[in-house]
Image 1 (cartoon, rainbow, N blue to C red):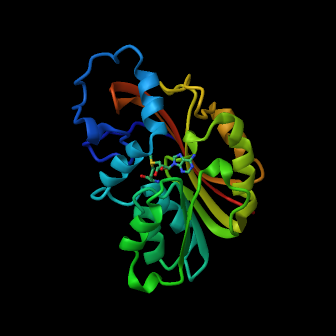
Image 2 (tube, rainbow, N blue to C red; image 1 turned 90 degrees about the vertical axis):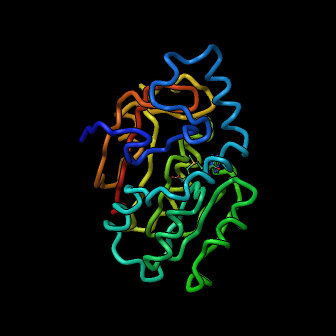
Length: 240
Ligand SMILES: C[S@@+](CC[C@H](N)C(=O)[O-])C[C@H]1O[C@@H](n2cnc3c(N)ncnc32)[C@H](O)[C@@H]1O
């Protein structure tokens, strides 16, 4: 299904990368300045950008993709979920509240401290935290639910396939996987450090899985340096 999202400020469920920090209003920059892509790559490689981004997430609702995935997966009942690129921990918290045991992964150095502060008391023994870059993971614990909100596109394309295999091997049937991926029509698609996929290529990643939802966002919007074109796939799939 294709849908047109409203962007930041109108309630759409998207990454909002940097908009909060720059204070740019939609349409404030008519065209990106020269070299803006280099600036974006350099800034996103900097953990301070993610720290600022995550700090600005406090008031947003839980990602609808995560809610969809939990609905497909059924009650947590202490089963394990993995939150890849847990960021501010909003989805980690939502999954804990829904009764899941959560393994939260993020490369940001202060991830553990941040999550332990927000974890509810009854989550004791149900939250494990791994501070590591995805591409350095050799394995993940077996899980019935894996969620990766706006995080997997930032893996170098040379390391993406290896990570994807590690992630899929952790998903225990009939587990549910929910991810955002970037498409090849995204304005950032020529940035060599991140991974982008044609729709056919993205669908191919789920070969052997049952695709429960595949939504495409393909529209102009806003980011760090003003207008850009977003091309994003929201995918939920089940391992049979
Ligand atoms: C755009 S934020 C998304 C955070 C949260 N999942 C959400 O939906 O708002 C991306 C998160 O992924 C983490 N991240 C980015 N690249 C990563 C990598 N290669 N390995 C591990 N974590 C990464 C960042 O530190 C950041 O917390």
